[in-house]
Length: 149
Image 1 (tube, one colour):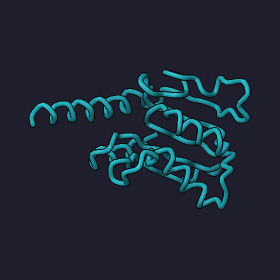
Image 2 (cartoon, one colour; image 1 turned 45 degrees about the vertical axis):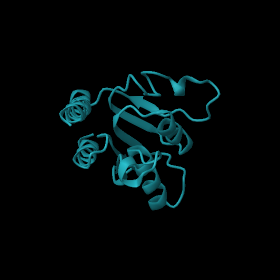
Image 3 (cartoon, one colour; image 1 turned 135 degrees about the horizontal axis):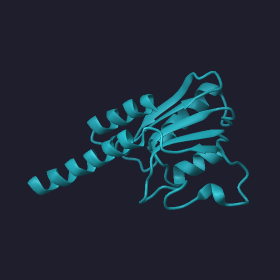
């Protein structure tokens, strides 16, 4: 999760929502990493998780990422939770909850749908305070900047 926090910090310094993701394989090797780049890429799809999953699929030479673990600093949205499910990632490790848009445990429980064909093992609350504080600091500074201008 510390590596994911480093990715989130990169996003923060680039003016992006500070979410970072790291994908590791069965040998604990990093095969994908990402941080939000929606503003830079001008793409609604440029979420940290999507970037990490795409990189891992390219490196592995296929879309099935069984045996892999995704560490993400903030609970994924519906799009990213769907990508985790579709890529067959075995384990998802979450930092801070996302009460406004989380699709795992906070706002929606996507993996509680009984007809899903894959259910990753979920671990929550890893370095949650640090992950959550970075998000709070980011949005606090955005509000302050908006009021100062």
